[in-house]
Structure formats: structure tokens, C-alpha cells
Length: 415
Image (cartoon, rainbow, N blue to C red; front, side):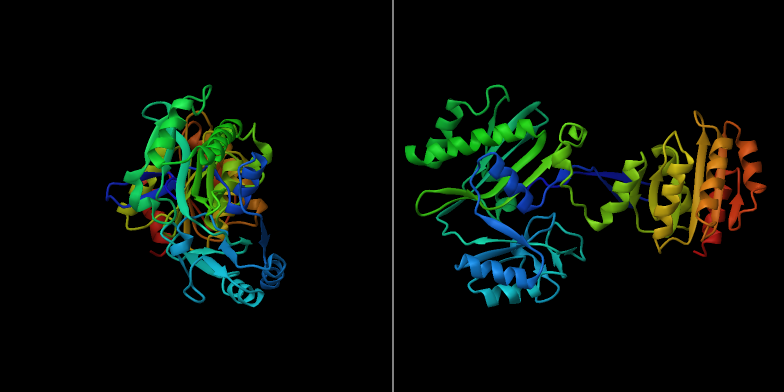
């Protein structure tokens, strides 16, 4: 798929990148199909299974060759490979027994594609439907052209797994939401792709319903790939990937309740619920800071001192016992972490309040499991440091100087 994830790169002075995924709701394929059905866009009749026996029973009831698809938040499944049998994440089975065998090698195993992490994604669900005879495959998508401040319709007659390498063949049609897909656009589409008048009726319906879905559900991307034509000139959406505007969550509560997160996104999600910004990195020194700029500087200084940060965790300007407890909980679950640096600058927030929150959060969780260095600067920092020194907490070191704090956590972490 063309547009599943958007990434922002943050660089430190040694030019080693770390990455933050900008969270946008994405749906699994079977969820997208249900949404398409709600908007009367044709999809094959399918069901979700979670065990090999369910797969066998479903294909038995279909009584015809069936498609078995791994449900993960990544494209390229048809060219991916499972770590079980080396086969793809999309398979055609011709019998219930074959469905059972395929499901046994898919459920509970990892699928690797061009859009997954190197280790792949764990598959816990399969989507199965009757196989269709396919005459042609098309790519159809609606998204935003931010350069033109306009929604755009993208169409290609070369859909399927090769769309990423053939993106230059996409036809582009800009439109505005109040008018939708105009007769002029559909006339050009018909001429460009050679659709008959009979074929244009379902194409028109699909395009207009896509615009309706795009607008009503606050989507940022609707992608049908492929939209297929059968030998009987019927059209079905075989695969779909959608993304939705996270800022519209208050309007789309039912839709966002469907969200399924990747395992590595769970901490990020839990942190965001409390107003924390969390990004997982590759080192073993945990950071708790207030402010993105301070996080960048902390990462730089720890690196210069010979360490390597395990995260970017920004508690913001309103750090409380609750937010700090959650921050510590996230770090405590990370078995890579050998030490933690809490680096707070008290501007709006007072350092003595931060110190009280640190003590309360640490006491609630039974103390620190790894060495912790706290550096406080700014409003009431001297009072805050004194509170920490007198707290009696073990594994705790206080340090007012930024560079010395970074060096100390590297030293205590045994790096």
C-alpha cells in the first residue's frame, strides 16, 4: 500500500536517527470491509477466524476455493513470508483440509513484508472469503494533496501487489468535497480506462460512496487495492487500507474503538492517554524529561558520555504523580533499561512539586529497580533536590549539573 505510515525523523549530532510514528487510526482489512459494506461498496462475503479448526469449518461451509489472508497492519502480504513455512500471507486453498494446514502455519507465527519490522508481525487473525475470478485489477484511492489543499482521487489500471513500483501510472483527479466526483471527472475516467456505460454505473457508485465515507468518517486515506472486475463485469473491493484523522476521535468514537495496535505501539498509546510523549529507541538508558528540546539535548549528552538512550519520554509541563508513575511503569517493563535519567527544567512547573511526585511515584511502586539520576534546574530546584536527598529512596542520585548527571547515569548503568 502507498500511504500507511508517516514518519518524522529526529537527529542528534552524530546523525544517528531515531523515529517517531505519528499516530493515525488504521484498520485491519476485515474491519475496512465491514465499513465498506456499511457504505454499500461491494466486497466479498467473508469471516474472521482465530483457530485452524475455525478455518477448516468456514471453508467447508463455503464449499469452494477460498482466499486466506493474514490480518496485520502492513501491506505487501501477498509477497511476504511466514517464519513457519516460508509461504505468503495471502493464500488460495481448495479444501477444508488445506485451509486447516495453512491456518496452522499462519496463526501464532510472524509474517514479514516490506512494510513490517525485520522480525515481522505476529498473526492472530485470518480473514477468509470465497475466491473470485478476476479479469482486471485497479487501484483506487482518495487522500489529501496538502500542496494544493485539496482532496485527490488516484486511479490506476495496474492495481495489486505491484502498485508501489508502478506509482507513476496513477491518474490524478483533484476535486472539492461539496461537489464530489463531478461528471467531467467520471467522463475522463471512462475514456481513459475504456469502461463501458454498463461498467461505469458501479464505478460511479463506488467513487461517490468513497467520497461520502471519506467525508463522514474524517478519513485521511481510503485505499482500495485491488478493486477487481470479474469476467461478469462485476466490481469488488478485495483489499482496503484506511487511515483516519486522530484529531477527529471525539466525533468518531465508535470507529476509534476498533483500533488494534502493534505490540511496540502499546506503550506509546498508554503514554499518550496521560499526555506523555513516548518513543522507543535502541539503547539501555531510560529518559524522563519535560520538553522535546530537552529530550533531544539529553539524548545528545548521554551519547557524548558514552551511553545510548532507550527512549524519548516527555512528561510535558504538567508532570504529576500519576504521569510520573506511568512513566516509571513504562520504563520498568523495558528489560533493556539499566539506568534512568530524570532531567527536568522547572519553568512553569515547580521543581519541588516534581520532586514530591517522584518520591510518591517511587514509593507507590516499591522503589527504583535500577539506578536513577535526577537532575533538576529552575524554579525551586534547590528545594526539590533537598527533598529527594532526604527521601531515603535507594538507587537514587541527585545532580544539579546537566553534564555530570548524564555522565553519572552512564557510569551507574555499567555501560
